[in-house]
Length: 123
Image 1 (cartoon, rainbow, N blue to C red):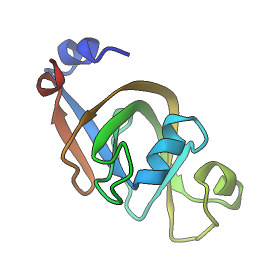
Image 2 (image 1 turned 45 degrees about the horizontal axis):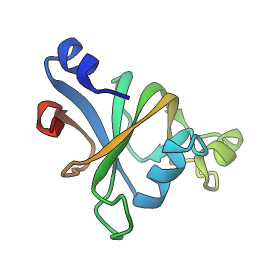
Image 3 (image 1 turned 90 degrees about the vertical axis):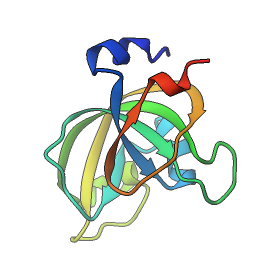
Image 4 (image 1 turned 180 degrees about the horizontal axis):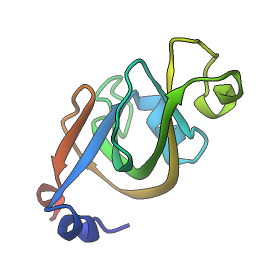
């Protein structure tokens, strides 16, 4: 998928979320459709999913896909399979839909939601 359409729609920036490396692969493959967090957000919309830099297993430190953050709510027992983890009443479920794989490119990760300029990834 080309990122160029996001550059014009979002002033060349996109919200991003860093996720542990093994979970990013599952999100990109559509196997994990709920990301578990301890914090909530009011943001809904497209997110660039970025693989954490460690462990250093390819594609560590790269953006892998774009998802739509459709909902943010308390985790329920029914979320376990989609979240690839056991239920915990303190967890917040970030519901991910419309998963679109992209050509991986390096991104310096951060905690929480952050913005990534998309023009740096053009070759």
